[in-house]
Length: 293
Length: 226
Image (cartoon, rainbow over all chains, first blue to last red; front, side):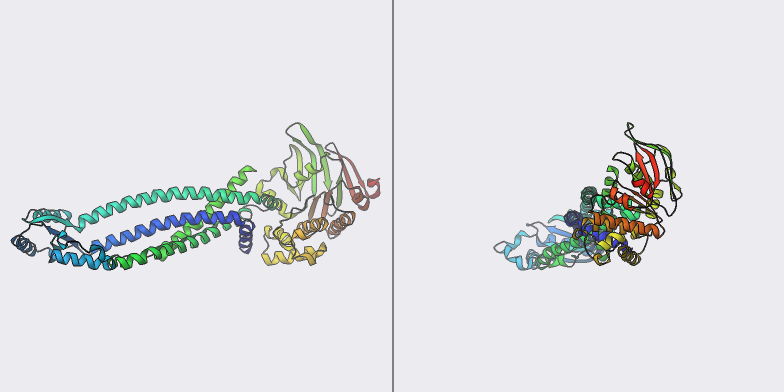
């Protein structure tokens, strides 16, 4: 084993420029994959938190809704046995909630009329309700006098999940393209490194090196460069995450609870991705060199 | 140790490098192979190490028929041989000891064992004090001695040397011959291809003369030089 590690490290030291390019291309690939993973996992977490708390329904009143209309809606909601909780939110309360949410950016609202936000009844329905049952209630409440619109978190969640599915497929497609491109770039880099050392490799063959003794150190070098590149990429990703997440958390406290960096398993997966990319790239480079002989 | 029988080899099907050449080198023997340029010495050398395949006849080295060996069999054979080339083929970024130890590592020795064997081999070629140097710090003769140490490191039973004294000054050339003859005295069989008349004048062993792809003389000691 010492032979493989020593020769692999020698190989890296022998061609620092080629090794640097290989590390940079692997790091770019891992950084891209990590960024996609980070964004999608945080988006999923937010949707999941939102959906786990039950089905939120907002019944918005039109600007010209009368007090009697509001009373009717409140009574109809209160009479529903599947309603866990409900509360009336006036235009002023909604304005105050928005200002609290925006926190330090609340001054953006200065000079605006609070009545632009509609009053509403915020309803929480049982999670166990089926889509059909919810849709029936929404239609019923939408038909009440003074109601301008009814929105439910389940339909928003479904739309969000649909969008996330699209994002996930696009991410997979981009990831696959990146993988192919990275393997080709890394293979070409390692091929260049192997070419600059063809005399040495020729000598190894002359003294009887064959199989893993011949190609093992080069593939191991690629593997080690892949791990180093993954570490660099993860460190960069963390710095970018911290740079973006800290201001978001302070500006939008409601979002901050759902924001998190990649977990240990995801980091390990990315490190293995980088290592596999380095190993596969160097093996492909060696194979191409051996075909030239 | 080496049995070559009726071997022929051509390049591109037109230039005949070997024409039914036959040779036998016994165990413990020191044989020098000489002849003019283009006589087939290097082609024979390349056949003996499995770099080329004979078109006719048979080549047996260390009891192995080379025509029946696949790539891994050839590699295994090479690990049993001590090979010295006209150019030392050293890896410049490895130390002298690293270069020598590499052949032992390729043969499956641990790094520690390979270093120990490299030290011994460097002592045998008089370069034990240069173990930590890089090849660029050595003169041509010393570099060739490093390559001989690399050939000796696994204590091979057969050493094949192709023009090991070419381009060396007389003193360094003599030193190289002395090392190879000492290896023979220690029990190795040595086949050395050379043009070097001065080297032949010093050697007292068997001399094989090639011309136009065949062996034309097989003689001993002074008579060979004459």
